[in-house]
Image 1 (cartoon, rainbow over the protein chains, first blue to last red):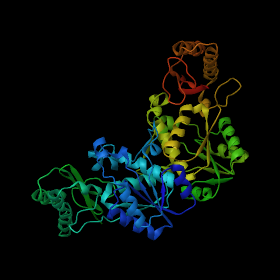
Image 2 (spheres, one colour):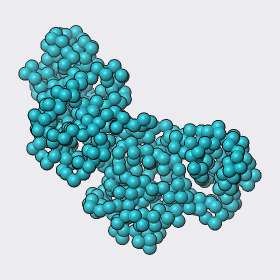
Image 3 (cartoon, one colour):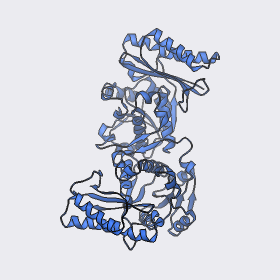
Image 4 (cartoon, rainbow over the protein chains, first blue to last red):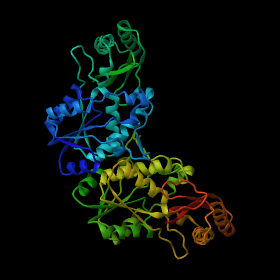
Length: 275
Length: 275
């Protein structure tokens, strides 16, 4: 497995190959593993990027506290038979004076974008850069970050980057909790409480399948499931068109049901897609 | 000469060649011709794009009144032995719902960016798209649009687009007027008066070469040259660092001296570079 730190080197290595890219911020987990397995089915050369992207964090604290264990990541990726990893330093990606950004507009301003204003501009900028540097044929993302997937598909289409985007289903633990690097920050009580997120999402699906399409009613029922399990702060429960992210009064397919909920200092997101 | 209207077609034609791109908004003139000649020295396949980019205009009027004569352009480009032209329709470039934009930050907010707030976001977005679609090896721009050149170099560097950017000197008529599509809109009086722009720029250079570096004094002398020739509205006379566009109290090389001046309904820009 090649470990590459420089843009010029990664460009050279990727220049004559059909590339599958799995962009990550490290803290490799089962969600990433499923992306890697999928990529390995398709492409001749798979490359995982590890870059904790400072400009997509709400503040420096959140950035500094993001889980980070590069040696363990390298070991895992070796075992997964990844062909190469790209681990640039911050200044390699954002030289002094860097000020360009990519913004995809309205779909990045709602939900996560409302609570984390610069987040998706940061995501769109780093992904545009990684796609330009590595020129992958395919790139792989997880449905857990549903809005991020929409943002990336939109910038890829609208800036004509020409990458085939694959979205993998959310990987969950045996209790239904969506795998996320942030789960490491949960204590036992919060970990138990966080099971309510997927339960509430499953309930919303069951209600819809029973013929209930009133989103206010469904959201209230979801909220009950979460708050009865653990009284906490819910940033949002959203039932929206899964392409435009416009909130719906009545469910009309395709619909994205998504939420963001705090457990202690940790904010978790999750979603399901009704198609 | 191939005339290409679709993104998919231009991608196919450009995919296996070393490409020189000359992006234009049509109204092909001697400035463009010099770019084409330069491109033809370098690359095996030269392509001129013609796209009057709506999102870089201040308003609809300015967009609609932009000079436009596609048949004459095609004839000229044929005679210049251009290999291909790319003339997409608006909806090919900006499909319904398009909302992504590229912004390079501070250097796009001053000078032209101050007077035309969305202009450089429009420029940066279309150039990112053209570079992604055509994947040129080289691209050619004119020094007349000095700030545009800086914006394009910055987005190309910072989004890692990997295109070699060539800036050609400003082409002038026998009276020193910088060749521009907008010159067509000038009447005889304005055309005569517009000669003062280059005269004032030459004066600034002469003053500097005489040892005068006080930019306020130099700007005042330049203003006199323009206003004595024709009393009009000057949007700005700027003496700035040619990389950062920060205004200078005293000239320190490299310096960009630039201006924007109205003649009737037509706004002209011009500049010189002191290196």
